[in-house]
Image 1 (cartoon, helix red, strand yellow):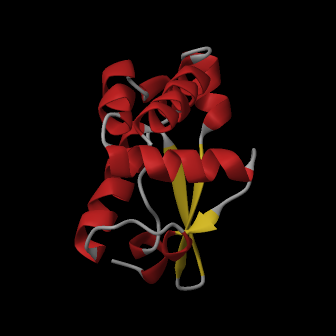
Image 2 (spheres, rainbow, N blue to C red):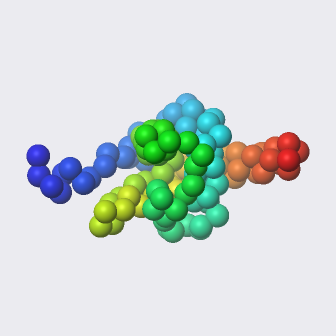
Length: 115
C-alpha cells in the first residue's frame, strides 16, 4: 500500500448518501456536537479533530468521526498530520432540504430546555 493511498479516506459520493445513515449519525449526542461545531464554522471551513473537544476517549472520538464520514455528513482530509473535518452541508441540503437546519434548531431548543 502506498503512502498516498494510506492517507486517503473513503467518503460516499453524494448519490450514495442515505437518509437512514445520516439520521443514525445525527442521533448520537457526541456526533451532534461535532456537527454543531462544524456548522458554526460556516460553509467550506474545516477543523482538526483535536479542535473539537468531546468528553470521550480518543478511540471513541475516532469512532464518532468515522460514523459521520461514512454516513456522508462530514468530509475528512489529511493536512500534514492533522485530519481536517468539514460539514458536507451542500450535499445534505441538496439531498434532504431543511433536514440539517431542522436538526440543529431542534438541538438548540432542547439544550435551552434542558439547561
